[in-house]
Length: 148
Ligand code: UDP
Ligand code: MG
Image (cartoon, rainbow, N blue to C red; front, side, top):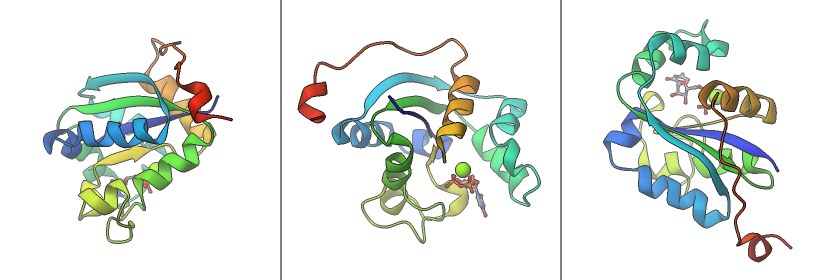
């Protein structure tokens, strides 16, 4: 089944939003397949955001991501990449709808609490980067109550 990479950024961890954010993905019906609290090095953050290396905000973005621990996760479910992005909300919290994570918990684009893969291909790359050790193989017993 489809998987996505979700990261609670350092501001989300510092602000105590970890439980709230995990709860939203759990209650939707997605399955948690990987989870760890990790403080990443500069070179690792630069690799994660390599596609944005030419952007003017890149240096600040890397500083932000290495400023404290992040919660790295893999979530699984039907259409989880696109739906995960909807749960997260628009990149700039000024444009994120209320009810989304960024819409409810963030003000500024450079402190927008959470990352989610933007495509199945980026999800594959990001999961491989963040979870080289592999992820859990468990299956939820709730499956027939969530899927028809
Ligand atoms: N970002 C920023 N300034 C900008 C655009 C993006 O600080 O003008 C940061 C923001 O934290 C964003 C991250 O860079 O979440 C990655 O940007 P992207 O366009 O991939 O947005 P996302 O996929 O996170 O919505
Ligand atoms: Mg992105």
